[in-house]
Amino acid sequence: MANELLIDVGLTETRVALVEDGRLVHLDLERPERDSALGAIFLGRVRRIEKGLQAAYVDIGLSRDGFLGRDDIVDADDKPIEQCLHEGETVLVQVTRDPVGEKGVKLSCFIALPGRFLSLAPFDAAVRVTKRISQDAERMRLAAVMQSLMALADQTPLEVTARLQREVNVRLQHRAGDRRSGKPSSHDPERRNGDERRRRMGCIVNANADGVSKEELLADLQRLRSRWIGIEQQRAKAADSGDVPAELWREMGPVGRALRDFVGAKLDRIRVNAAAGFAEARAWLFEHAPNYVSKLERFDDPAGLFELYEIEGDISAALGRHVELPSGGMIVFGETEALTAIDVDSGRASARGHAFEEQALKINIEAATAIARQLRLRGIGGIVVIDFLHMENAAYRARTVNALREALKRDPAPTKVLGMSALGLVEMTRKRVGEPLAARLFEDCPTCDGDGRLPSLPSVLAELLRRTWREAHGSPGGKLEIACAPDVAALFDAELRAKLERQIGAVVQVKPDASRRRESFSVDRLGR
Image: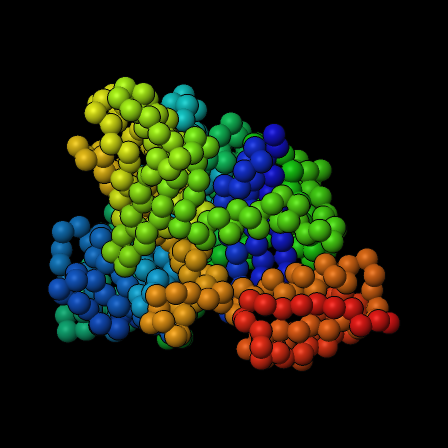
């Protein structure tokens, strides 16, 4: 079956789905009111140092200060945080994790500029190739190619970057150095007597580079090099003017980001539902991947793009506690502040003796595959503990763990599996990047002390707008009446209503109905 990228652009929400062999494997959504700073680069100012945490809180202009751990500071080595940074100092950082709960963004000084085939690492000279490329020969080829390209880059345009960086650091030393001694900041990656090793850039080659030519890799590297030079120029300008904190660079929107991350050799089709999103996708492909322009399609069907692929059902399943397995077993998710617990249940399956061992192995391997998929769809990060069905056979336990590791190789987020205990428990970690899917679509119930949850207002509004478009599609004109709960009706300000009416070619009348629950609404045509 085909591998397809589906982009559903709405008035208040953009959703992206990657479907492989008919199954949803990746889901992303973005809304204006939850604007993500993930990947953005800032020139921030250290607000305070926490010696106990060995971390600094950095003002980058957001509502909450970002968290910068000592291990994420260039040249920190084994020095304590107070010898790396001091309060009031300016520091170049990148957001590596969106806010989670009461925690602000997480920051790092190890900048990584993402491209289509690789990420440029200005402060790390190493060349790394993702383990998601399974063939050792291909990984060695890519490493050798990028080593040669990075060496050439250091001798040509990249020297411009190095010079700019040195100039910026001179300015920063005056502003951010030890004010009593005049010494430069110890975290400065350029300060150690002009150490060439510290000036040299590295890169991380991603899975899209599998089988890609040297020329394509060079073109991607050149684009990233130019972007870094621009960031350094903005950094110098902000440092000179004292305009700190300053945002220097931000990720692309959801359409461009999805194309960059997923357009590759294994992608067969790209479908976009909206004219604006289609035009944006077409422009990106013409510039970055012209061979894929022919795979781009405009989807214009009242049934809805996600409905056609039954993705709405997959989303609902990814929000539930139980996931059924083909053999009759199931997996059950339980989430706490500290970790996510997953229980594998035999469900309807029943057997005894040796037959049970065989059945348990089958269920456990099915569960391992399903768990890897669900962790990615749900956006679960941090510590995960999995209670697999107990098996006496050590070889069967090893096969289960290997199945989990193999399934996790398709996940772009870093994961680590620690093995299975005698009780059948497997501990693993998955890098936490942003909010889980449930946190983006739901909010705590205000009447049950947070034990229950309600669909969030933006989620209900986005679904209501999609329903309205489907109702009006193909038959413009006349008037539509939307009946919905008062808190949903309050979201229809003049600007949103005008946008909706232009999109569907009909007059919209919104009727608040206090008898309705938040998720309940209706869309009816009143005539022309």
